[in-house]
Length: 354
Image 1 (spheres, rainbow, N blue to C red):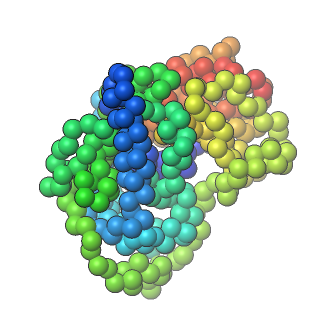
Image 2: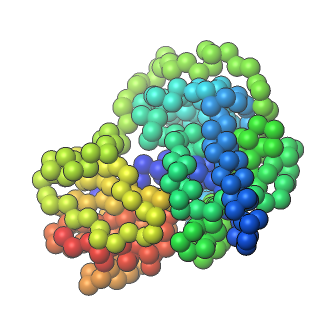
Image 3: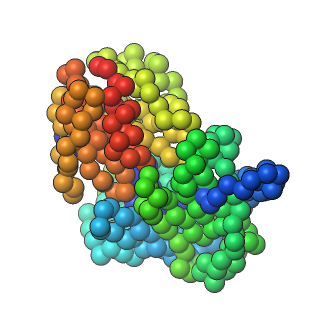
């Protein structure tokens, strides 16, 4: 069994865990704080909706930090508002030539080295900047403060900082174009305050006119169209999803402040049903995977370390900028992948009793 991959992982590797909900900086005391927060909320809401009405073309560099290593991705992005996307990988070398074309309903991922076109649901492969954002939930859990302006890709950009109202921790910072509100740069921070991921446009042209044929979902001669083997369609009706499982799902009794259950899905692989529940606070997320295999996942690119999950012995690793923790209990394998520290995930895991 391979390590489960959160549905957010593809988007984050594409944009280096970087363009989804955005912001961060500091608290300001007194009446000025309330005014700054109101202004920050308004600017943030405009920034996450900007690509609905602004077309652009640009080159984006994204970096995910894993311990003392960093993985970089460079993509060429063409977006025709409101819903047409064409994303072409320039780096790393093993991804060069990969391309994604989407109408925000369906996405085609072109893999020239495999002579395949992989069909995805847009929700499983969308760049984070284009995914829906729950503004109300973010405003409930984060203080959004306006910071100093800066230059990004030669354009004036305003910085917005998102600080947790529960912990006071800086979680994300974005830089939004002063003219169009488009997000030009983003940084996400880990539990220890270091940069976990960042993305920034190196070049960008705004207001570009594209021919619609550039975004046609077509299968070139010599290539085969296949469906993505990802998790089943997500649903918010998690109660009926649990009733359909062939094992008893165990839910966490503890969630970090601001987190709630968002959706779930099920995948069947080699006769084993694995359920994924996604929890979030509007900005950060984690996925809980459970199956009745009782087997730990394989860690293909990371070296797992031991960790205690209540009375159980588990393992954890940093995978694509996210923490992955896995352990066995009550005949189940339980794995959590998310934007949290190993200590926080261990606390969540200890509250799960299969």
